Image (cartoon, rainbow, N blue to C red; front, side, top):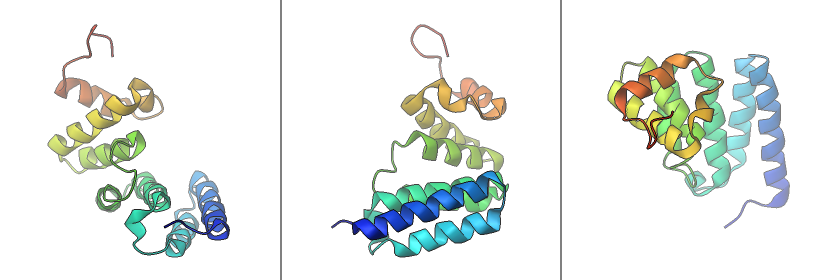
Length: 146
């Protein structure tokens, strides 16, 4: 089962607009766009990769808005969607949200998954505290260079 091309294009457009709103830190407008896009995904929503990237965008929105509990919930839900497990960005944001909630064991697990999937580059634009935390929880890679 696939999303019809016209619907897929509309979903992409709504998400692109949502991304612009998110960059402007207009969380309410971004949220409306992402939810509108999610509503266009057919049931069962978790069967479509579009749901995964919409949920990633929503999780990022909540993270940037410092609503870490909601970010962790949305990103945890996203992990049940097609293509989510192993997605470095999803693991990064979920790990960061868990870190901020004080759930350090879950944070270490998710941040490690992000690192394994994308290397240290995924942490480059993030607060250094997340990568520094990860380095206290796992052994350095072979060769000892992070």
